[in-house]
Length: 315
Image (cartoon, rainbow, N blue to C red):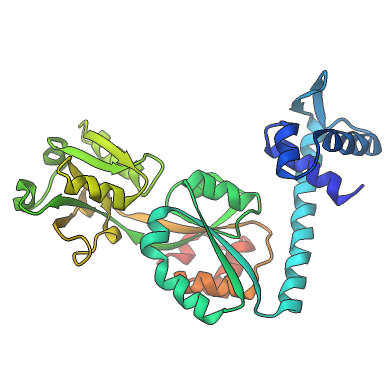
């Protein structure tokens, strides 16, 4: 049994039993992957994948158990590498952050600046995507830290730590009639064309739920994943924008005004996601604490060990 065989096995399962995609991701050949999986099955004396001709069709019951153990072994092998890199390389290495545009653009710049000044020998990479992509990158080991508001709680492979809470604002061109409203209501907003986030991003689920509860249908004319795009089209007069409050800056967003609507849509919690069982290097602890000062090394270790509940790490 070889680590390479376990890696092939797990990658094929991750790729929905598509051997070609797994081989491409592993930078090897499809016949090579198939051969190594068959050799492993012969050695174990069990069939991991059911087949129809040359096509893999399902994971067998013993195969599911083998895959669970294989993932743990590969994770621990990766942890050994991480320990070696930390102690041999000192304050050097790489850190991959997976996050959304909103977090990267508005919440992370000062954190990244401080981190890079403190850890000049660490290569920092930032991968932006949807919350689902972010979670999957982290689960698969392609990213070290996930930062998002949506979706992370749907992945039991991740340990989640709450970082901060935020709300939404409505942005409108200067002089828009809605700015004269003393207290905005959902009914008032429903009368206007609205521009807001794609359903997967930035607390959009709370916006939907609020209108649903009020039995109102909002007139959403345009969606985007980027608050800057939303504000651009608001400036053009195509509708009112509903964005994360952190995404509005009076000095930068000339010609727009914002109204807080936290009372309508409630608060959202941005969380950090870490893959369970992963060895965390010192500079990763530092990044986490720079982003959320209440998440000390002790708090992170407790969460990773499964000690306590999320309530103990609340803001």
